[in-house]
Image (cartoon, rainbow, N blue to C red; front, side, top):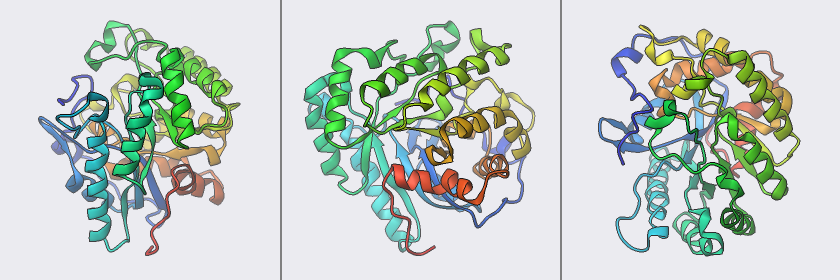
Length: 346
């Protein structure tokens, strides 16, 4: 697939204008959310991933999130997304072997299956699990959508209220029956949809991506205090659903409205931490560190900052947390949620 115009591709020369020493290089980290992609003019493959993992932070394991790449080119259409899991599984095995077991890139894989298939999604889920018996953990069926023209360049926009459709709920029931988790990618205006889904499936693990999708462009530009208050109220309701876990990241994306990618120089970690502090601290306050985990969302967030600077920002944001809270945010929540065993050689 091609890169959506909505997200600016990283400019390596611009990113190189900002570097800084690694903060707390011994802190063990699981990167709870990244992609691999090969879009025209924008590649983030295993070589780029490994370069980032070697940038100085102690990232020992990662979680791969579907992005519509490497689908099968033939066969039944519902089964074509299994090709992405097959590809990532092969890369994960290769990279772990090359590291001698010291690193676990793509230690967990979250793929795509069309949950609107209802009961028929069983075949797709079984195929994913067969393709990656030890790493496949669940499904992301993204629903992030806003009808305003400012979001038109997003490309395909899922139908609003997708999670409420009876066929989708039937697919969710099958996902739960397989013991798999659901990854929810929505904008803040859709958080009630996640709330209703979580109430309908109270025993099913649901991972909320990108801090619940705060918005700051189009009709949400210039009124951050109001949009933050609405976001916080929705997140507070969702926090009462104890199987919901939140990823802290994705805040460098264009729709958040911080505009880092438009500046003459890339932001430093202090600038990022200052911009993101209200969202990160609120998530930790509402959900607790044991239900929060940091994510890079690379390479999408790479349009605004480098991997090293990003994780420095997260470390600044967690500086006032207790040692146990920092361990949860950077490693333990992700290990538990995605059932990852940390490498023996650490």
